[in-house]
Image 1 (cartoon, rainbow, N blue to C red):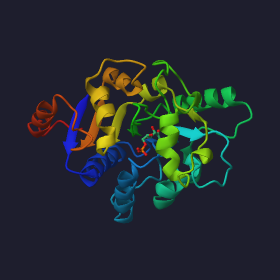
Image 2 (image 1 turned 45 degrees about the vertical axis):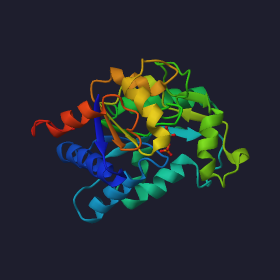
Image 3 (image 1 turned 60 degrees about the horizontal axis):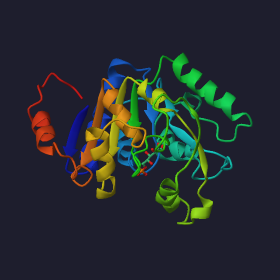
Image 4 (image 1 turned 180 degrees about the vertical axis):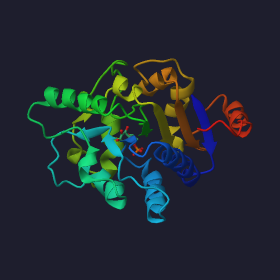
Length: 261
Ligand code: F6R
């Protein structure tokens, strides 16, 4: 796992966008894994800017979402499908049919979840997965206690996650769904490159556990320690509890020029 401490979210977004554009350069039909929430927003801004500047095209890419709330009406602005459309897909040239997400309105949820994992496998898997992290250590919506071998399935959101996300629902906890469909930890781990973004001191403990804690279902993101190509990009605040911060900085500063992220 590579830890990169940057001054702010814009510096982080530049590095993630560099990796995505380099990937699309060498593989124009790349499969991207897209996250919702606040963390990736500056990445999407930077990708939209580069698309507008003619520096990258998403025309042949596909995108797979991490998760979706269960039961939100199709037109609800916080339905993750609509969020990804607004924040990313509508701002670049990715075709509408190339954006995939778990169906939070499916009548047969187990079948829909299986079909989602199969759809990811059918395109050869995700090449680069963007991730955020919850204050409770979740990635996608794999809450504490999630099986480290899980596949896409329904999960109950923790009270902590629902409180964290109430800001998207007029600060009204009652409006925040109680369940979601989420890629499992094994589904996420099958992506070829994981890039996790975290900013703010409320993420510091989760980032410390992710990189330096024991691998445990109590901090689901710790499974990333088993991934052969995981990059964690944090600002100073989110990196403030890292015990080996000095070493991570030194490793990044002295990284050989030929070694990409
Ligand atoms: C969203 C997702 C979640 C968020 C996490 C952090 O698709 O998968 O794991 O990445 O809850 O959310 P923010 O970025 O809003 O702090």
